[in-house]
Image (cartoon, rainbow, N blue to C red; front, top):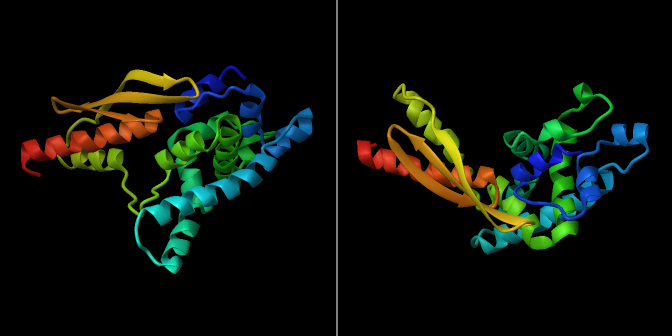
Length: 216
């Protein structure tokens, strides 16, 4: 699947095992038709890994009581935020299914879990954790900086912000991206483990600069 190179750019991770990468994006309906491995087993492992990563981040991130951490973990690993994260990166279009029109939210959210497992099996816990951290709010603060910047611009009837990739550094299996966000004659750069994370970082800094320049 040559198009999965584009998916890897969106993931911010390059697989050593190409068959494992393909399995991540293979729905059980496609696997049944073509006699290949589906992502169901990866989904099983990814569900457990995701729960661990989120629980660890919540534990390390503050002094919240057990009940509060449990509710936060359940909310963060539920299907809606996982599916939303996949769609935000445009990764659902790489999913192979017998009939993609019949693929629902469950399959899209399961793709997130399969990718967590695939990245873990291919590269270990560090890149798997980075993948999750870049897409889920693990500190209890759900902030979409790109969305906030766009709202600020729309409220003033200004053009949309542009996001320009500047550089990709680091190891091939765990790259770092640098992106420039620009709007209204102002610009700011951001870094992250994926293009999406770098865009969010750049948007946050650009919004700060614009608010500072205009007084709010």
